[in-house]
Image (cartoon, rainbow, N blue to C red):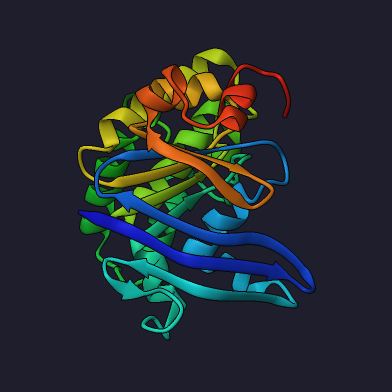
Length: 250
């Protein structure tokens, strides 16, 4: 099943066009990696999906972008409702200045959940899904800033999971992490895809090859190649893709 569908999608920051006629199907309960050099439009495409670009002055989008068959920019007048289903994890961990527990419960409380027992159950469930529960269960009321960088990023993933999204967007989630913390995140993503759809922007082609089912290579705002990851990395169809993954540019 197609979870996200882009059809002739174009995006502009003022007079500068950043995405050009993007056509793309993102499949349910798979990991799709977006790769390409800096400035190629990867993060812009990601932010179109949960409408984070709405807050950018002068931004404009045309074409069609669908989520579960509904048009993201026409059928979701309440952006908050859309973002309940589409979680986002950023490049650098961004814990809120509060306890680990309150970080995870934050979105739930905004949704009006006040029952402490229910909150505790969801916090525990989310931390377990993020492979963090055993490391923090005895210090849930300690500041989230006391966690290591890798733990903070897994906590941010747990925070996104707590509101029960069915799609998570990750914008270079491991770029600030060491190899051990990165390996934990990658292992976590592979487990999570049994339940949710994942789109990850990464500069690390080895990471894309390790974790993704599909890979999309963008260059100058255009999709150059999109296919099964094993095929794209072992036998790319486009010479530009081959040059990029061989490290000849980018």
